Amino acid sequence: MLIDSHVNLHAPQFDEDRDAVIERARAAGVQLMVNICDRVSNFPAVRALADQPDIWCTVGTHPHEAKENPDLSAGRLVELAADPRVVGIGECGLDFHYDLSPRDIQGKVFRTHVAAARQTGLPLVVHTREADDVMGAILEEEYAAGPFRLLMHCYTSGAELARRAAALGAWFSVSGIATFKAAEDVREVIRDMPAERIIVETDCPYLAPVPHRGRRNEPAYIPHVLAKLAEVRGWTLDEAEQRTTDAFFDLFDRIPRP
Image (cartoon, rainbow, N blue to C red; front, side):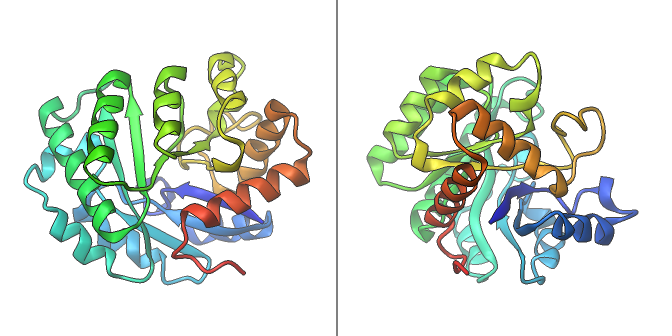
């Protein structure tokens, strides 16, 4: 199956042609998409798209938006995650590149998401940028307090954080960044990711893969990401598709496998 594990179809970049974008994805063979929540206040818009049988969703608040709801409770996330179309907690985490929310608030809200993932059993969708040491420490500390499943989404951080996360059983998702000419450091980390825990994503409308780089990204472009993953890992295209499909359903196990 072709699966896009991380889309932002509710984003304003799709307001003019959202239905056409979804149809192009289907025409390209994409059979499942997970629409990712960027902030809890946006959850109704995120969830509305998951009424379609091939689109599921998550609930959570991106670190950029953590300041919007610094007192977000795990109970609120657990309540929203009771919806059977919700298959993950997040996107959440730490972003010390832009610092659009204070770092202490980012950390507090991130830990709230971890607690919700632990309580629900749903996977935690983790965003991390320029925060490797702090992220590694939080993940290890929280995991020691009680295990949870996690996905290091659009992984572009360093090899050491990847090693620490993998030791906790993390999954990793590969995005269009892997196709960028200057991203050899990202490809080097991909080569060492646990083979049975790699999935693919577009993160559309961002990060369009080569040959579409610089344009708005769409789920229909996921074959380019899968092809690059196959090349980097030395897999056939069929093998890459099978491996990432198996890993996806192992992680997002609320979604019934066809």
